[in-house]
Picture 1 (cartoon, one colour):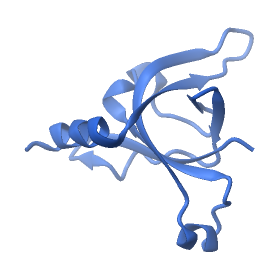
Picture 2 (cartoon, helix red, strand yellow):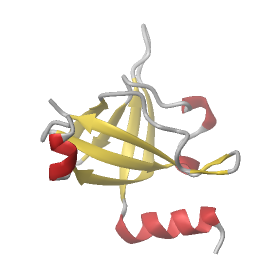
Picture 3 (cartoon, one colour):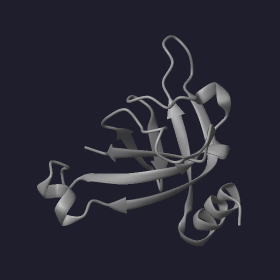
Length: 112
């Protein structure tokens, strides 16, 4: 199975649909809906390593994010079930790649 297909399968099995929102000065926010993502709570080891218990790990399927929204930045938000969670650090767009092809974007988000 090719890497892109493997990622699609991973997200279809355990992912959910979210929206990504970017605030724009003097304009309406840019929003992309229906983005596939996997969201999980931080593990005990991650909390001991400095992540707060209110933060979540998110993995976003890159092919659902239009090129005009890339790269995702710290002030971007993930909207899910009426909750707005903002990236607490720059999202990682280097780890989940197949050569030059971006497969997924990883990040830490917080609603607090």
